[in-house]
Image (cartoon, rainbow, N blue to C red):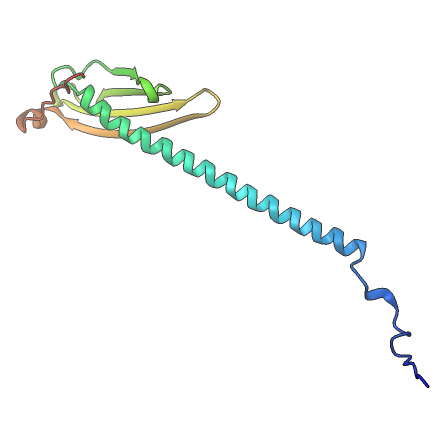
Length: 149
């Protein structure tokens, strides 16, 4: 004689799988996680691009100082500008020379800018320097232009 246990026959099949609500909730959580992840990746790429542009601007600023040195005898002119060639054709430079105080003091504010981008998405790096021309002359601060290759 075989005796059957009634334990298993009384179980309902309610725990057999996930409900539709649980599946939808899991998909929602996964979707929100992916949106946050890809948003963070996009922001990271934007930061890396901006850092690369600023690093390039600093390098080009040094190049401007070498290729277009200031002439201590001609500091009254005001504004100088130019463009770069080759890989840096999207970058422009501008140097603004303004006297500070009385003209006979020969004290100048020199602002050098590297600009890139367009009207809707401009970028700029700038360095401001102050120069006392008599001290610079006394210390032999006369730059010769770098030779052109």
